[in-house]
Image 1: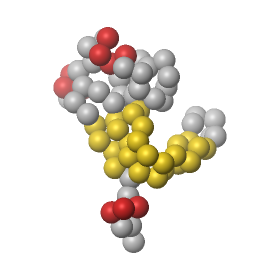
Image 2: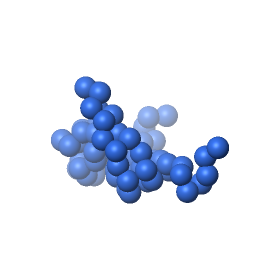
Image 3: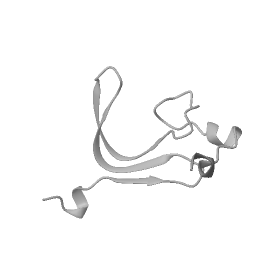
Length: 69
Protein backbone atom coordinates (compact mmCIF):
# COMPACT_ATOMS: atom_id res chain seq x y z
CA UNK A 1 0.00 0.00 0.00
CA UNK A 2 1.27 3.45 -0.92
CA UNK A 3 1.89 5.85 1.90
CA UNK A 4 1.48 9.54 1.24
CA UNK A 5 5.23 10.11 1.61
CA UNK A 6 5.87 7.58 -1.21
CA UNK A 7 3.24 9.00 -3.55
CA UNK A 8 4.04 11.18 -6.54
CA UNK A 9 2.04 14.41 -6.78
CA UNK A 10 1.22 15.76 -10.26
CA UNK A 11 -0.35 19.20 -10.37
CA UNK A 12 -1.69 20.89 -13.50
CA UNK A 13 -0.92 24.57 -13.05
CA UNK A 14 -3.30 27.15 -14.56
CA UNK A 15 -2.17 27.84 -18.14
CA UNK A 16 1.20 26.24 -17.39
CA UNK A 17 3.09 22.99 -16.92
CA UNK A 18 2.44 19.84 -14.96
CA UNK A 19 4.47 20.00 -11.73
CA UNK A 20 5.67 16.53 -10.72
CA UNK A 21 6.91 16.10 -7.13
CA UNK A 22 8.27 13.02 -5.41
CA UNK A 23 10.38 10.03 -6.37
CA UNK A 24 9.63 8.85 -9.89
CA UNK A 25 11.00 7.25 -13.02
CA UNK A 26 10.94 9.29 -16.25
CA UNK A 27 10.88 7.17 -19.44
CA UNK A 28 11.59 8.90 -22.77
CA UNK A 29 10.14 7.86 -26.13
CA UNK A 30 13.16 5.63 -26.85
CA UNK A 31 12.56 3.78 -23.57
CA UNK A 32 15.55 5.29 -21.75
CA UNK A 33 14.75 5.63 -18.05
CA UNK A 34 15.95 8.16 -15.56
CA UNK A 35 15.18 7.96 -11.84
CA UNK A 36 14.34 11.39 -10.45
CA UNK A 37 13.70 12.79 -7.00
CA UNK A 38 12.30 16.21 -6.19
CA UNK A 39 10.33 18.51 -8.44
CA UNK A 40 10.17 18.98 -12.21
CA UNK A 41 7.90 20.85 -14.61
CA UNK A 42 6.59 18.98 -17.66
CA UNK A 43 5.36 20.83 -20.73
CA UNK A 44 1.60 20.93 -21.37
CA UNK A 45 1.49 23.35 -24.28
CA UNK A 46 3.55 21.12 -26.58
CA UNK A 47 5.84 23.94 -27.70
CA UNK A 48 8.79 23.66 -25.29
CA UNK A 49 12.22 23.34 -26.88
CA UNK A 50 13.29 21.21 -23.89
CA UNK A 51 10.61 18.49 -24.25
CA UNK A 52 9.32 16.87 -22.14
CA UNK A 53 10.34 19.66 -19.73
CA UNK A 54 8.78 23.10 -19.55
CA UNK A 55 10.96 25.99 -20.75
CA UNK A 56 8.39 28.77 -20.23
CA UNK A 57 7.21 28.89 -23.86
CA UNK A 58 3.60 28.70 -22.65
CA UNK A 59 3.93 32.32 -21.50
CA UNK A 60 5.27 33.51 -24.88
CA UNK A 61 2.48 31.82 -26.84
CA UNK A 62 -0.22 32.75 -24.29
CA UNK A 63 -1.19 29.12 -23.74
CA UNK A 64 -4.68 28.83 -22.29
CA UNK A 65 -5.70 25.47 -20.86
CA UNK A 66 -9.36 26.52 -20.84
CA UNK A 67 -9.39 26.34 -24.64
CA UNK A 68 -8.80 22.57 -24.36
CA UNK A 69 -12.25 21.93 -22.88
